[in-house]
Length: 72
Image 1 (cartoon, rainbow, N blue to C red):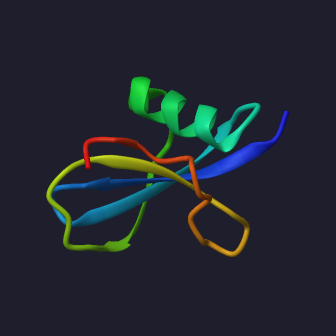
Image 2: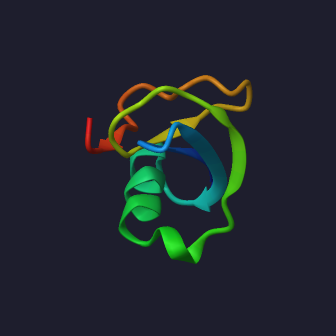
């Protein structure tokens, strides 16, 4: 099964990333959202944002369209 890098963007203006094994990018973000404590998150910069969202990233660090979930 593939591993997706998932970005968690929280309203504290901090981005975190982790690797999630899943069948699809959308499943990876849903798994991260539903059980964030099961993953080791690494700080990955700052961003101005007022909610929490989960987005799968491709190997170049770009967002994978259609993988977003959370509060927008």
